[in-house]
Image (cartoon, rainbow, N blue to C red; front, side):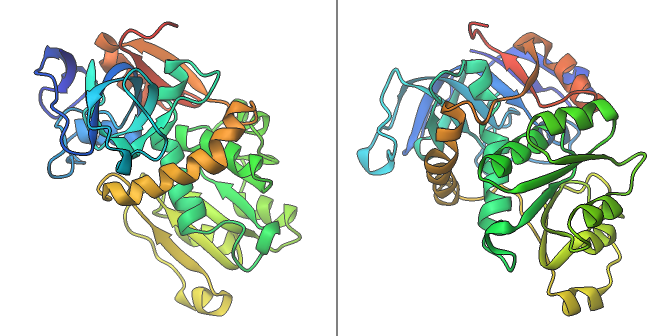
Length: 338
């Protein structure tokens, strides 16, 4: 099969189209004929040598695909959605998505939502699993001190994570704020459901969210920046608020006032999804199918695909990802009908 491999660590042009043997699904896994695969920031980190795949995972990049189940283990005990050979699915992987075939745990495969193309479906798993796990399972938006009226802010609202977080939180009835790096990106965030998007280059997000919440602050912040943002985010949180970190683009160290944490009962937490066991991800999949998939099928949540590249142009796709000029997701096409 054709696959895109990281020939050495470095710039985007180290990604090359090569021939690889087909993956052999292990117990509990299915084989997917890949129509499209999503590109995510961890793929870039892996290409640069900064994010090794978990033990036992494919060395090929790619954490999400959409396509057709063509084989593997369809044991009824581990098949919560009743999937079968021939079904169109989108799947979360620990690696191996940049290829014509991929093996995926059956419990991490979801049926493609009705009405979506394979290109659109390939843009879902990584960000939807990540957002659900962190915003709802971990930070418990809507179940904290603010109850059902809790408010939410996402940093990097125009990123793949951002457009997903805005739409899910909005669809579930929460007030949503977002930051982005240009006025155009801010408008895009507001079109997706953010009540107010904040241009972090010209505005102070702390001041803006305080002014829009009667000086209370927001209950949950989802952040992939960290570094110097953390103390400002703690100031922007309401009492009992939760800051959840999913990446460290701005640096791994921050200076925080612990007195604030004690006095206002704040929580700093975070997680990485990729190394978690299948059972952990299977619970997220079940929540997404029940709570989020109906909103996608009703058109209240829409995949945001910025651009599609032929698989052979994976290097160009990575260069676009690193330029951060995109809004939403970048997808590789392995033969999907566009």
